[in-house]
Amino acid sequence: MSLRVCVDSSVIVKWFKKGEEHEGEALRLRDEALSSKTCPIICEWVYLEVVRALVKAGYPKGKIVEAYKILREMAELGFIKTVPVQDLLERAKELEIELNLYASDAVNLATAIINSENILTEDKHLLQDDVRSYAEKLGLKIIRLKESYLKIN
Image 1 (tube, rainbow, N blue to C red):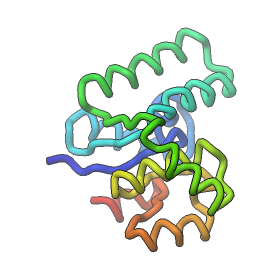
Image 2 (cartoon, one colour):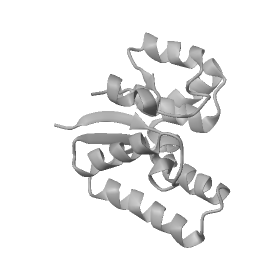
Image 3 (cartoon, rainbow, N blue to C red):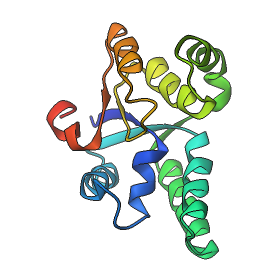
Image 4 (cartoon, rainbow, N blue to C red):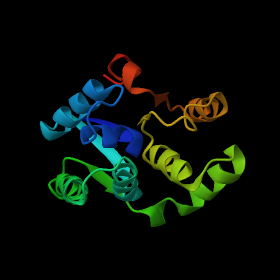
């Protein structure tokens, strides 16, 4: 059985965007997913967040389309578990109100909460002390990539 962990776009984008901080840890996660050692869990919204990040970084359209296709194929083949946004709406709404999170951050945190799994992120909003404390009260950790292999393995 593989290790399960929720992941947001701030981590997944590092699979495609070279030269990012903590790229090595992100690529290790990808490799572990492809060898079924780890099962990343994402909200389906992450596909579009990765596209947006690559567009914003000026990536060529063809490379962006290819990255999107790779992520979709990884999910179809069972290397990534996806959660429909519809399943997260109520919990995400509560998180937006309670923690003053953006919708995308609330959806990613809701993915972790609903699946009862820790979340890997480099997102500054999810790494705030109040958000981390909230998750800890639910028995979950919000983990940075540089800490990841110390805390999730």
